[in-house]
Image (cartoon, rainbow, N blue to C red; front, side, top):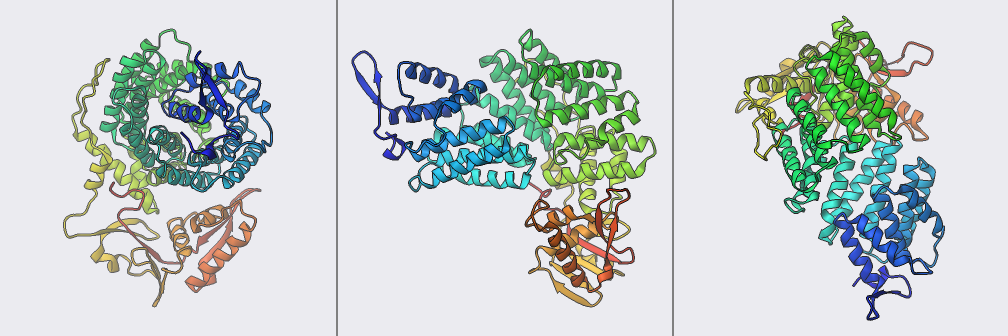
Length: 630
């Protein structure tokens, strides 16, 4: 039985059978919540509808659960009708039921693109939960934070989304009801992937997998999602293993589109592993399994992935035919996620590149290359731009494109496909003035060398088993980059280049520099004056960014993001930029050390950069916090 705080007042009862026995709403709610944790939303919706059909009054406890089931099963129109029929300000409801209603209305408003309404409903939910007994409503708190994160993502307010996700993770750790742990972990994994954090997503998906039955539908879904997350960070062997497990379970339990989708997951992993032939085999199998089933989104995704694989193989004519099919399927879909839209743009550019239409590929890409900058597909899009630009002799554009891809890859752990054909780009990236770009390029080149040295087994048969295949992982590559025993390596960035040197040679590598920023000791030296950066933690990352971007400088938005705290959307953003730059100038002891310049064009942005006459050296560890050994 649930505590009284979870009941309406007075607790009604439902008839149970012909003998006239009754079951309390609280007991029904507890059972329904456990069924919801087991992915039984269709059954719950049907049962509640049958119960409410003979009642004059809709009970709030059942109504909010029916509303959620409608949304989870895709019956959005029914969910809207039910939400509209319920009281706008249900004062007589319990705080938890009122919070659930507000959260569901916020979800519907987010789906409909009504951000203001969603935010207002989330404020209502927060007030309702504030009135609930202490310690109650953990599930409602979790749902509120998840809904907040989804809304922030839709509004492209990623710092807010990341904060909401952290709150959701904190609440999830306190859940006592183990039945919820698997679906909650899956949800947190989805949000982590949307926030371009594949490592965290893999951990959540692995947690979900560990809490599901070995050959159940839920484990099939967990295997598939875990495979995609692992494949995106270069752990191809493990990703292939989990995707084949998903296929095996789907073959037993979910014949139809879910079985076909599991094959598509394998194709995604094989594309990331630079095995386009194996990817095509998986897609062929998916199309056979799908047959005549009407599933527009899956057919669209299969067409996109087949186009990419054909482009990787240089089969340009077939790639264009499948691209046309993908575009037609896209036109038949009413709503497509922004990531899927970007995926189509990237695939179209890749098909143009494969057919030698390099200028068309660049023109198609440039308008989208700065959208969703942290996403995996955008990294691949920038590499298309870089390869085409390099082939056309436009080295500055190629350098810009590969640096964008490398920075995203280093920050999030992405491992992008098409590594062999991108070798000239990664060689160019080694000449970057940003140690993060150099670090990522070195890791990518190490992966290419390792994969070339490996003799991989033949692609798996169409009806694959769960046997693991052999390929190097990112953890192996980190080991390749380790220094020899007894030697510690560091990166030293100067105006000329980024070099990797032994720590013992740091003084030699920084000789002649009038400005030295040592991130190992958190110290800054200007001539003979040394300043500790321990108490200037907001300025240290800003100074580091100014040295990394000494050629281009930083825009106002980039300055605020580097320093942390309120971002560009804050009311005093311009004032904070001026204050931060003033403090950096004071730190360097020379106002002329930081120049204020303006980009070309009528709408050019103001940038701040280190003066060209400043001889600097930036000392950094070999591994960053985001790319170190895992």
